[in-house]
View (tube, rainbow, N blue to C red):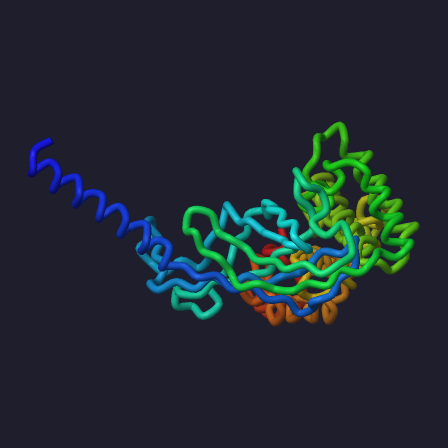
Length: 317
């Protein structure tokens, strides 16, 4: 190899290393939780915050990114001498400071497709997260995991298959399996009292029933008119009302709760409860200002107040 080639190779190597170092330095990660103690059968609700040295700019618009998506997010949990790595679901983080430097959001640490429940044994866990190719490592949290209650153990026994957890978490399953998954979550709601898993199951059921209701009745206004004039009964609507109401009892930081409240806005609109609809929209915009539905809430409220007699909620479609 000639001296020129050696020099060129060295320059390329230095550039690649510099780029790797710069990539690692552009993002730092911080995690926190409002509670350092949970029971087996409860998710750990954890806020993740990514800090960047330079504003994150969209390649398409050339403007500051309103949100970023982290595809590869790993959790490492150490109990005693054993450390286990879990793959967390992809998460979209919002730009809370509106400068393109700091993005944050809430993630629920609960289940891994390979390892099962993240916290399956009582004890003290030291946890931290890592974000894929950026090689960003977070701070460490100490989490105390307590034994499950009898009702929580029963709920976990009903979720007997890995796909049951996937349906609870994201509403995903094969079409032919959906009736079975729904039945299991209904059992949890009926048999497992006021546990988090019971309310979480209700939230998922409410969203699923409301989606089925919307497919069957694409025009909320027509259904509302039929309900008022003919007193029609729709099981999908009734079940959506019941389960969404229960799901709304979840803690505010629970990610699924935002969508539950958004669907409840439509439910209250159908019922003709104008004040309750406005109250729910206010709660959405206040508690979830950077969320998908929280951002829609202010516009929907303005539309409602502009035409209170018609109460047309096109944005709830």
